[in-house]
Image (cartoon, rainbow, N blue to C red):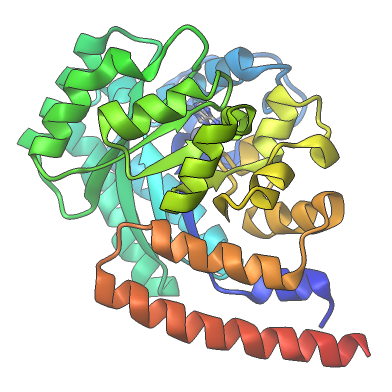
Length: 344
Ligand code: ADE
Ligand code: ZN
């Protein structure tokens, strides 16, 4: 077993993957053809997944969403991404999706969530992987739309939908815009998270924690620019769901060695590892760990900690968290011993 095998074989939790960003390029092309969605010129399907910044990325993301229309489309894309995740030993995922983008195109909420539910159930039956969903607010739209989305979620409860998040471009769209949507979600027992300081100052992390009541922070890279807030997050054990490859691509000049993630961990922040929009950034769950080893110098013991942070940051019940922490730590220790022995 070499380091790459080790990183593939360790059990994983993922808390930051977007369903619409997880559609394989070939599936995107097939669904676009099925529904008559016009695509930009391309030679191979993979060529469609190429963008210089977050705004262009989001345009393609919306185009993918446009191609997913009926219940079986939602089942298929959910099943396919969970199948791939299971191949990388992801055992549990909390996955974002963007209800409003589909509803605005005339797809009823029920159609989408029930297709997703079919995909989750089929993947669990076939691969044992478990998954819950997080409804994402598009922060580029007016606050009323976010509020409406949360109302729709509450009026159409499903066991698989357990929380809300906030995504799309952060610059000029601060989290306080959505305080009413978050308050409504909290009043109805939904879990809360948000993309924050992905591409904006540390203040957004503070707003998400103290005004919106977020239980964890998605990305959070700029938090380290505020010494006191960083210390506070470390002391309180706030979990940060980091995504090395997608964000190096759109924000940090593709320079993984210079990614703030390394400094976040050095300052004691509780990070865990995710692949954000895997095919859209030509990545997968294991590849994220590999680049963190190769470009940031993290060790097997660090990855053991990041996996356990993922369990802590998840919205699983406490007995399950305690049991998984114990069992997975033991399993990873065994893999670490084997890795050390075989490395000689
Ligand atoms: N939608 C999908 N991935 C995203 C990201 N990393 N940031 C904002 N919105 C997203
Ligand atoms: Zn994201």
